[in-house]
Length: 378
Image 1 (cartoon, rainbow, N blue to C red):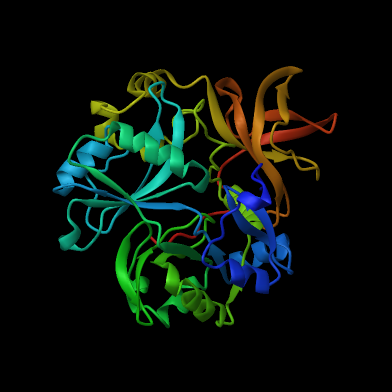
Image 2: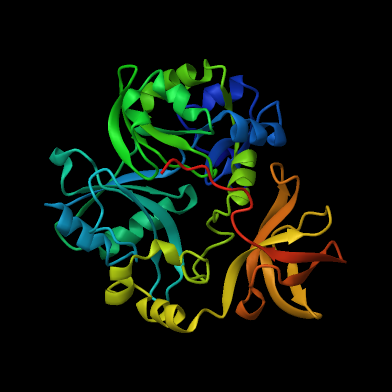
């Protein structure tokens, strides 16, 4: 969960002081100093989120607006870069999609929201990965047509409240949040603070992401942390939670060499887009939809207790068939879990695999994803 950024280069989120005061172990991540864990430790933080409500600082993510004259025009513009059906978004709805290369590889994955306020017609709210936001912004600026403006948002923080008790906590401060269904969003008042709140997240649990003015982020954080159901959660548990939920991490499970079809993200490409195309890499996507990809992202359950980390070779009958892209101990599962790419012929659930872990051959099998059933509020 670290990168090569030196400490002197690191940026701080508006909540940096809170993390330090809570004893957060700060590490470099995507150019920011971020808490990997607090005193309770990763496993305790993971379990707390599954059972209660975990509070994450995700202010390092990129938030931006695309602005055009009306929804149809702005949606048509962004659809030249992504395979998701953005034109069909209803007010207040969120779409998960990807920026693609001309060869169909994934530049980044992102969330696109159509605002619910009619006064904001023509705007789209985008949240992109922290490590890719500069790449994404340059990609959009170079390719979006005239009349569509990209407006990065630099004065807002982003918090995520995740877990089965998140709704009860939010209900005390923002009644409008409770009315949201999964993958919808609205502007709302949180104890007098104007926020943009989405019912979404990266843990497989019910929860919310809250975009808040940077100068109000500390106040909102403190209010949420005052609840008995809430504990602060670091990047370490965020990673184990998303792995159990079968969710991709950019730069590991998806990158510019992987297509959405290989990555088991076919569900994110609507029927109209599959039929019509009009986005980068469409020829590859169409071919893989018709003929199937040569490899697929799968869940993997090692039979033993040894975790299979990223880069672990996967073999069948002593023949290499793929590699692990994410792996570790799943606290909710109670054992090691992993994801990786294997040749399609070996991708069926139940297929027996061999993982080379620390020079030892360890038995494993292809497993259905997610490893832990999601708890989204539909």
